Length: 234
Length: 349
Ligand SMILES: Nc1ncnc2c1ncn2[C@@H]1O[C@H](COP(=O)(O)OP(=O)(O)OP(=O)(O)O)[C@@H](O)[C@H]1O
Ligand SMILES: [Mg+2]
Image (tube, rainbow over all chains, first blue to last red; front, side):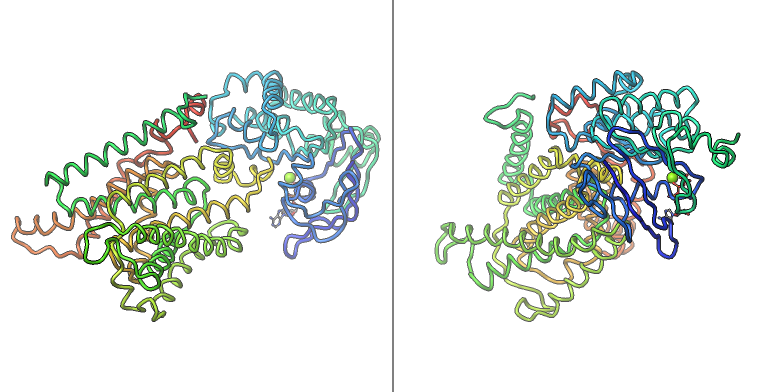
């Protein structure tokens, strides 16, 4: 579904991605693990059109999409849940979801999806009229994930969805990601929480300072001694 | 869905009715001599300031951009419309040697006013197109520079009077004319803000990145808001030139742009109601000080010159800000301006 080849991104003089290649097949969960500053968020941002890349190719359903603007990509079904939640702080929970439905013109579909979000996260339902900025960190993350469900793309990029969450909530978020996949979506997941991310993934790539030294089926990567040492702390 | 009467919501009708009631009251007071023509003139200026403040609020308050050269667009509108009425068509409000209203003159005036707005919008688009692609405070600097450049250009075009200004502009703007145009402008901006497009503008102010990620074409919306704001500033400039009967480069200086900016901030970023109240309050305050200060000086047997007016004015503003950090309206809106179906969301953003 997504094929990235030789992608290169620089911030001024700094080369953040030195030509990485990977692919995300239809309806799979692919995870990208790597230490801080490895370039994981950079990868997601350049795929979703938030930043420009200098070279390479990004094919989405066979179409070259490199450097298309973000709002165009949303229309094609790409959906990026960014690092650090980025919700609308002075809009209510419900209004945040309405905003997420910007490209969804069908009101009935919107209602269905909102119901679905409220079913997954009853806490958001209770707080539907609370301002986004006053939600707790975990609730904001639920809202960010809920927004992805309402936007309803069939390809979702998650950037550290478990960041700053208590263990129980982490489980809940990962369970939600599996549910989203079961509904037919394809997922590219970036996580610090490598152990759990590998458990729910089909395939994994390890990113190290802008290059990909290993990749393989998630269970093989989890069993790889070097990965174990560096990312799983075992 | 709120109750509708002929496709217009009941609230909007009430708002219009209330505004018309106030207009009638002012006309009545003026006819009976309770309101002098001087007071009516301040009301006229306040109404024009309402257009300026509400249109700047669209850019700064609702969309979260920072433009500080709003009077530059007013200058474009003023000079464009006045050139048409005064230099090209040479129309007057009344037919010569009679008391009859010159209908054709008014038609020319309205078209000239619109043309002024359109030219201002066009220039707004030309400036916004490159600068709104940038994020951050660049826009402030660019708009500031633009305002000054426009002034300098008019200062150097002899056809429109150069540094003497464009004089002898026919007086087409009167209370009723200004009132109607102000009302239409406020309603247009209110309808925009509460539409789906308005929601996109708000989302840009709230979080540009997130709004991009839900599919809002942020660059296009920012440019649109900027262009529409410039259009209404151009209209306001045209009205003002045909009220004061002069368009002079110094009228459109940085200081006036800042005064409009203060109206937006004092009234509340993202509150149309606030901008309306602040435009009236600050215009009356500034004019009131003109007579109050010398009067106060006479009482204390000292001479207080007009140069102190801005000092006291600024001090009063600081005091307002200190004691009411939420400013006049915060982000709230008077009920009559909020569509009924929006209400259940609690506070309008
Ligand atoms: N806007 C920017 N300007 C300059 N350098 C940047 C910018 N954004 C990221 N970088 C640099 O690019 C590199 C990759 O950053 P990136 O955010 O992709 O890391 P990451 O893998 O997501 O890390 P983390 O796990 O900490 O989120 C880092 O060295 C970072 O400092
Ligand atoms: Mg990151």
